[in-house]
Each structure stands twice: as structure tokens, then as C-alpha cells.
Length: 310
Image: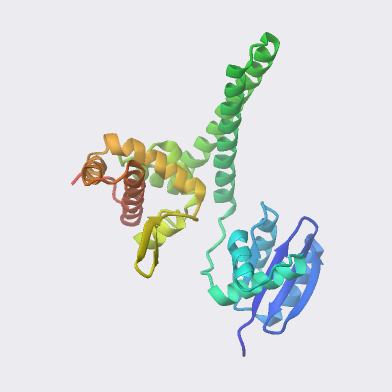
């Protein structure tokens, strides 16, 4: 039997579906009945892989329903699908066309399916994301407070900052209760935090947004985090290697941790200093430290052994 690949374009109210190689297209509502119909139609096909495009959270319930039915799926990056569409000359963009492009993309690239996070992990990820949002709002309000000279507006801004800081403390308590209340997460956090430069926020971001930590090799885990450099070369020309893609929240957390580790972690400080002494730009050195830190943390979780200087 020929392998079947399915692309699903997700919108607020409906799902557009395209099946290859048959070229079958149909749409269902994005509700309980629609998901049941979708599973009933895809189940007998036993598709090799289903691609569901990430659309700001609308895809979550779809992916969960498909995974629950035992169907193999992957949540794909919409930017990658769009680049693929442009590469094959598809300029038009409608929901049915997008579904077909997703199907063609997963057929061509065959991305590796990964298990969806369980309910507790998803909740932790949402709380960590909410914490990040609140901090961004606090920073924005503090910037507004510095720019205004109107006392009444200043007072309004300060009241809002106080409310946001109170909410931030509440979210921190929820995150702490979730992590410390789980024996597995508590043990992982303690292992990660044993590395100098890694604090609770970095550890909890990794637990929430990089559950593959300790289960993949160094190259693949760096790629997931967006810290694996890719080469830019054409003929005799060779450009500077760059990093891109991956999980932005994880990369940001590791980058900040690397800045601290470059000063206080003896192994990573020596590594950073060697790079600077060799003439590497500071940003290149910082990224290299972040990648090395991730490799170390990956090994710590894999081996279940805390940080050791030697």
C-alpha cells in the first residue's frame, strides 16, 4: 500500500484537510463532531504522517485528538511550510491550498513525530509563558513611567505595575508548586540547577519547553533549541555560520544563563575566555557557551548525575 500523507490547515472554526497521493480534499468543523468525523475518515487510511500547522494554539485540540486516536502526527512550523510553497512556485494562499502544501511538505521532508506534552507539562509551559508575558508588560509600563511627566498618568502606571508584580508573584507560586510538587520534575530541576549559572527560571523553562532534554544526542538537542549553527557557503565564498529556528523561549533562557555561566561557571568561563582570546566576537562566544551549556545539561539529565567541575 502506498504511503499516505495528510496536511491539515487549522483555522478558528474549521479544518481543511488534504490527503496524498489521492489528492482528496475536504473540510470539517473545528469542534467535537468535526474532530470525530476527521478521525473516522483518516483512521481507515492509516496515514504514514499527518502534518498539522501551528496556528497560535488552535492546533492543540486537533493534535491531541489525532494523537489520542493513535494517528502519527507532527505539528509543523508555518514559516517552513510557506518557504516550501514559494520554493515549489505556489504563490496563491487559501485554506485548501495551504492544507495541500502542508501535505506536500510532510511528504517531502518527513519530519520526525514527537509525543505531545501531557496535561501537566502543557500547564507548566503555559505558566512559564504567562510569566514571560507579565514581565514584558512590567518592563513596558516602567518604560512608559520614565517617559511621562504627568503625575496622574505616573500614578496610573505605578498602580498597574504593582498589580502586575502581584500577579507575577502568584504565577511564580503556581510554577513553584507545580515543579516542587512533582518528584520527577523536582529531581530534574535540582540536577539542572546544580550547574553554576543555571537558576530556577532557566531550569523550569527547560522542563516545560524542552522535555526531550536527556533523551537526544547533543547535535539534535542543540537543533531543537536553535543553537546548532548552519554553514553558509557557495563556491569559493564562505559566509559566517549562523543559528536560527528552534524553540525561541529555550534559546533565550539558555543565552541568559550562558552570560552568567561565562562569569561564574569555572568550566564555561575558561571556555569563554579561550574563545575571546582566540579573537572570536563576544556574541559568537556567548552562543558557543550557550550551546556547550546545553550539551552539559543534556548529559546531566541523561546520566542523572549533578554538575561536576572536573
